[in-house]
Length: 74
Image: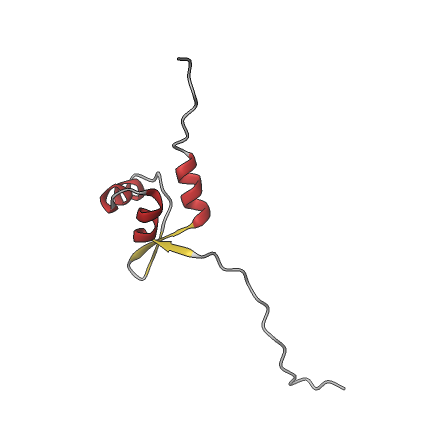
């Protein structure tokens, strides 16, 4: 018989892994200043957590995909 005070494990919630500005800079191979400009102009979505920008992997991938170049005629 189970008692009403039985401890059950808490449900796990998948939290997105946040990347720092410096990690994104290294992934994209760009400067910090350029990334700040992209956030300021709204091209790259970010969250400001504890005074620092944080990015999800999905946001960074979406941003990088926006620079895809379509091959044109030669």
